[in-house]
Length: 301
Image (tube, rainbow, N blue to C red; front, side, top):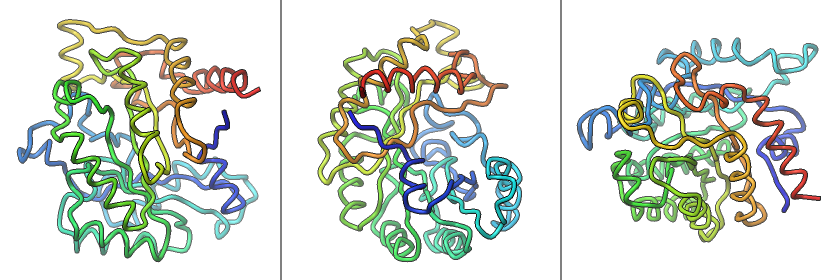
């Protein structure tokens, strides 16, 4: 089992660390504004899964503030002009809105010399032909990653968490994005209520069989965050939460299912500690990653 992380990929391509700037596009979500539902998926916080993103403001202001949050990760002696970033539009659904407004916003991002990659988080059911063409055009200027929130292949689970679209919508969007030459990264949540380990592995196996081959994957454990519908469900009728040992063992099993070449963008996530109800172990990301890396080394010997 060979693991290729996004850090490896970026260092190889750009010869240096590339940092992510969490930005806001000013979009909402059809699962939040009443088009499909209200309040988003049951696990989604008020920040729309982008709790660390800048508030919506002129892009130059957002980038300036986002750099202040991450620049300490660069070597102290690295000149500013040598620093490279990913413009990451994560929160809510970043292809849900006026295509021309979004084209201007994303074009402004990719035309900045310090931006190496544009990363756009969205839903598969918000990728009409005009939006895919717009992203494809930007991809001719700088690499564009489209991050799709799939979470699970199981329709019963998707209905329970209120995802709001069928698996067929994901399959259709995936094919059209790949035909347009775009890089596709898929989000999976491990530990959704009602799912067994085999259910979760089935989601990864589905992604492993995709053709064309999947570009990248993000794995993360389920968070129960204060103020979400999931939190109310958990408090009324608690469902099982994986331990750190169980989660890290499962991640290794997921990685073993993936074909060579799939880039691992995430193996655990960050939840805002002020909102985190469970699992509390996930607040110590360094400890989780140390355990994960130790288990991966064991399986890759």
